Length: 454
Image (cartoon, rainbow, N blue to C red; front, side):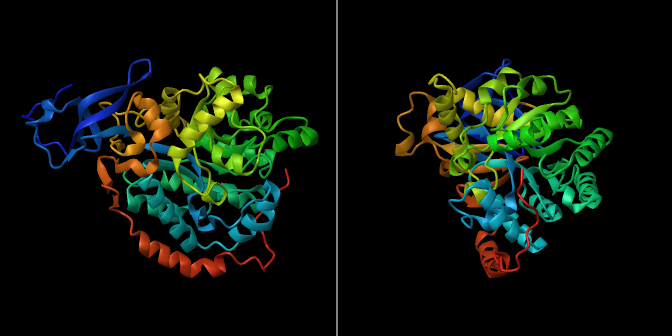
C-alpha cells in the first residue's frame, strides 16, 4: 500500500530503513529501503522510501542503517523488583525466597513499588521493550507508571491463598478497574501466584471469575522440576494437572517458566479449552542452576505459543529481553542437541508474534503491518560488532545487543529517541529510590509475606 500525498499529514514517517515483516504464513522476512507510515497510533502502510518522499508528515525519522522491528514484549516480569536487583545472589530457590526476597517484600510501600516500576520501565524502553506482563503487588502504582511513561502492559494484582478471600477479590477489582486504561494500552489479568501458594478452592474461583468477566489468568506454574516432583508426591498430580482440574486451563492463561512441565503434561496442555501460552526467562534458570529449561520444541509441537521474558530483576538482574532471545536460541540448541533448532528466524518469531499472542495482543501488536498498533523499535547495525551482515536474522539475534536500540515507539509516540529517554527522568528516580533502600532491605523484623514450601 502506498499512501497518497493528497491525504492529511501522517503523524510519523520512518524512512530508509530495513523492516522485519511476516508473510501470510508468519515467516520472517525483511524489506529494504522501506518506509513506515503511522497515523493515529496505527501503522497505515509499509512502503518504499521513494513512495513517501512527497507525503506530508508531522514528524519524520531517517532510519538509514537501522532495522525496524516490532517492539519487544517482556511476557513475564515483576517490574518493581528492580529495587532488589543484586540483593539475593548465589542462593538456591528456597533460600532466595524465604531468607531474602519474601522478608524484604514485606517492607514494600506503594512508593517503593512506584519507583521500582518507573526504573524498570526506563530500563525496558532503553532495551526496546514496548510491552510487559507484570505480576506483582500494589499494582495501582504500576498502572500509574505505565500511563505516565507511555508503555503498553498486561497487569495483574498477585495474591496468595494465605491472604484470604480478600486477596482474590483485590485481584479482580484491580483487573476490572484498570482494563482498557491508559488510552487502551493497559490490559489486565487475574494473578494467582502459583498452584503451590494458591489452593484448589481459590484456583477454581479464579477460573470462574475469569470466565464471567472475560479476563485471562497469569500465574507461575511448573516453574522447575522440584515443584513438579513435590506436587506429584503430595497430591498425585503435576502442577499443570492441578490447573486442569481447577478449570484454569479452560481460560486464556499465561504460564510463567514451565521448566518443570513433564511429558504427561503435554496432552493436558494440548486439550486445554482456553488459549495457553508459556513465558520463558532462561537467564534466571541458569542462575538458580535448574536442571531443565522450558521445553519450547515440545510446546510448539502441540501449538502452545512461547513468549520471551526476563522474570524480575531480583532473580535475573536484568530486564533485557534481547538477551532472553539470544539465550533461548542457544539453550534450546544445547538442550535439544540440535544446532538446527532454535534458528534465528524462529527466535525472532518467538520475540514478535508468539510473544504478542502470549500476552493476548496477537491481533494488535507483534508485527509491523497495516492496521497494527505502531509499537516499533529502530536498531542500529552500523557498529563493528554487527558488521558485516551475511544473515540479517542471525545478526539481530546473536550479534546485536539491546544497547543498539536507538529509538522506541509505542502507539506512534516516541518514548526514546537516539538513546535519550523522553518520558522518564532516571536520575530523579534513582535518587528517590536510594533514599528508601535502608528501610526497604531491612530483614531484622523476621517477617515474610509467604513461605516457599512446594
